[in-house]
Length: 198
Length: 198
Image (tube, rainbow over all chains, first blue to last red; front, side, top):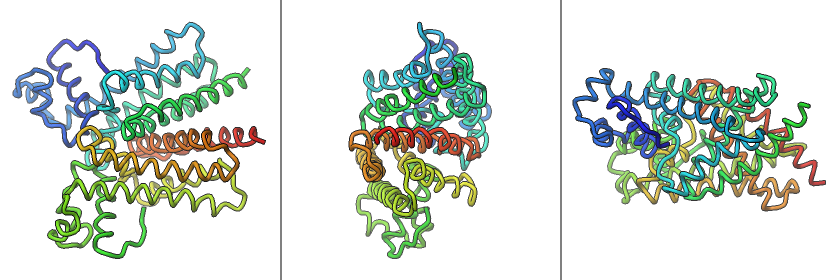
């Protein structure tokens, strides 16, 4: 989840997402976010008058936009697009990261949901919007491949659910095996459903 | 995740699991666990000399045993067992809970992984053991249905991953729709793989 982030406001949102996906929301302090972003502590108050709740919400929104754009790009980059190759690219983003830098960070939207969905309504709503944005993007890719919209939405939910769950299992096991297993099992299923459309 | 728990030690482990699955590990305090369990604060020190880390680890282990036993029981309770009916029973545990008491609590093992896998090695190891126990139980059920062990293990990983991810999506959306979608899509796939074994 590295990307070039320019302004101080964007850097703080990005830093919040990075810390949340490593330690969860509750353990992530505003002071730590400012330090990670190389920003003065006071600038957090300036940019995020709603405090930590606002910052967490924006970090979650950022992650949803990021995941959505990624899914669109994966489809565009496939020379011979298929549902299994789209799913494999989504999984590979995570296996690549875990192999490169370890299992320190998961999905910030999942972390925000686990930590805050019962206690902080604005964060829950931001997480729902972020998952919705990601799912819409994956569903749109499936529609572009020929799936009818309602089926595309259901399969997008399955793909995202399987990845989110396998991410948690992979972090717990310190192994990419759960992600690899999910890719190997779901890929052929997705392609078979695609072939059955014709 | 209600079950009768008798002794004060068991009550505290159960209470810890309940609070962790609602608010995550970091937001769950020892004092709160004691209050939830109706136990004096001092008894936590007595039963859990390793403090919060020990209590969280035991709560996670308890959840793994609980999920494993449930999967075994679901298979035993099916009049005409099939992989899709096993999976549907696993999903229904969660849709029933969400419909009965709302979306306040998710999976404590996922919460422990998200909050602690990078910071607290003993909790990560407990989460890995808990997921492993659950997966072994689901895989054993699939082996009983006729799947070869290695395939059963991969499918168990997919089933658990899909449920764990759909749980997070369902909590974020305050809707059981993600769990329902995952059940509808994966059930026929599992049965088709089962039929292909014959």
